[in-house]
Image 1 (cartoon, rainbow, N blue to C red):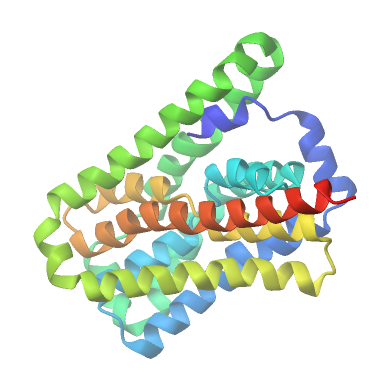
Image 2: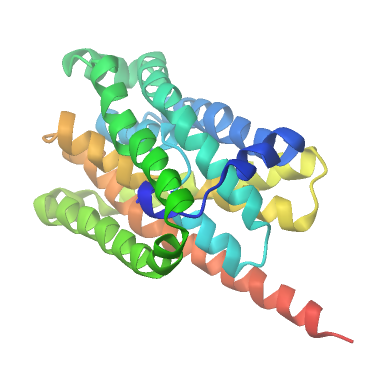
Length: 279
């Protein structure tokens, strides 16, 4: 997934972040600071089942999902901001994802025992995140730089392939845990929809507080609201394959954030199109 989206990344995208960092900084603070902290506090306050709560904390600790770039384009928002945020958040996730997962999993007293029981090894998770995110990101950028024609031609098939991979992850998660999902669907659906609404709201609020224009604000909203649940499932399948509650949370996230993100982007894109067509 990261290799495909990074084919279009250039060094100028990072320069753009440094030249005008308001939008990426606001979005990254909402994504890596506010979302995990509020998820931890909410699951603690609501006394969410420990496995479900820890699954929510893991998703909140992941970087933005690669489909946010496509959704930002459909919304006619600022794609450059979205791509830059995806790149920076993916690199930051090599440190912040395992750190936030361990920290907030320990801070919530309901999940603290589970984190201890599964003997969380932050170093091993860090290695996995580097392999899943940092390495393909750098390889994709190098490929796009040295083989631009191939990179351009590969954009559409890589997007399709990425979508198929994500739905494969989700399908495996549900196929292996369908009994648990049916028994807990009422709690899982509400938790995921609520957390996704929180993520989208935090992105929009961050953009408003720093005075971003509409295009930048919508890019930040989608970037914060579309989490890399594929990374979360990779971590779960590798380290916690028997944590069915956590897998179900991450799996349903993989479906729902596509539904909510595409709905928002299509509504926004249609509105923007009408404004552009108006005399």
